Each structure stands twice: as structure tokens, then as C-alpha cells.
Length: 194
Image 1 (tube, rainbow, N blue to C red):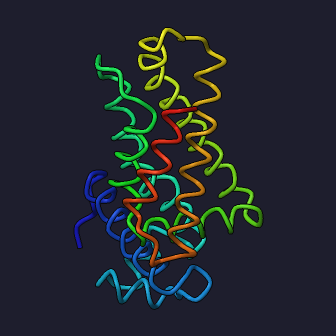
Image 2 (image 1 turned 135 degrees about the vertical axis):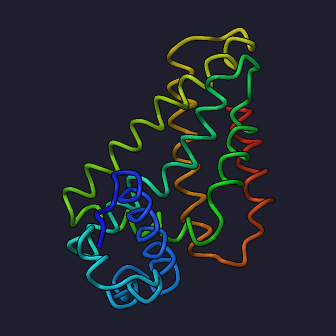
């Protein structure tokens, strides 16, 4: 059998991580087995284990890449834009595009497992730090257009934004019947007044 190129290996790992994320969303991290992930991915056990040693490794991959990629893409685009974007508009864009119920549920599981997995905790903190830096860059133009480009205000807005994102994810997970769009709009409006 030919060896995978680095690009093929990367795509295979993403395929496996996507399958793991679907299983974690459906069954929960604790109740998902490697057999579930193998079946979901459609790959052989050997293929899975050649890339990941354990379910915990897969959760770390999900936390470090799969969940974070879409957030970075959205916030990064806002940071590069010359058009100021209000915190509320940015919030609604981020949660609307990133946090459908399954992703919110997996993200809450990542946070729940982090205190028991130092490597996962380090990944989660690193990702929050990266997102915080992107948010700070994204919110500076808006704060400047409001006549207040001070770092203190931008730092406060960033902290409130991140806390709202975390609260939104928890609420979506605990209350699957919540009107997600209305909740995002209410939180976005509050962020614009912060």
C-alpha cells in the first residue's frame, strides 16, 4: 500500500476528527467509543490508530483544529477589514456561523474535560488566547470610530465578547429549544451597549 503524502495524511486526520466530532456531539465524549468513531469514519481501525492513539487524542485534535478553524476564519476576516464592525454584529456572525447545536455541544465537552486533561487545558487556553488577540484587532477600528480606541475599552469588550460566546455555547447545549437567533441578537445588542 502506498504511503500517504503529508497533505493526504492531514486530510485523513481531519476526516477522522470530523467523524469523532459527530460522535461526540451525538453520544457525548464519555459514551463514544473508538469503535463508534471507526464506524462513523468508514475507515479501518488500523487507519484510525495510525493517526491517533486514543479518544482523548481525537478530542484534542477537535479542540485545536476542527472547532477553532471557523472562528478564526470569521474573526480574522473582520480583523483584516477596513470597515469597523460592532461587537454585536461580529458576535452574531461568529455564533451564527460556528455554533450550530452540535459544535456548541462539543465545545462544552472540551471545556468540561479540560480540567482533567492538562494537555487539553493547554490547547483550550492557547485557542482562547489566539481568539482574544483576533478579537482585540477586530474591535479596535469600531472602538476608534466611537471615539474611544483605548486599550482598556477594547480589552473589556473582548472579555465580555468571549464570555458571551462561552455562555451562548452553554445555553445552546443545556437548552436545545432556545431560539438561538433571538438569543444571539439579544447578546449582540448588549455587546454594542457595553
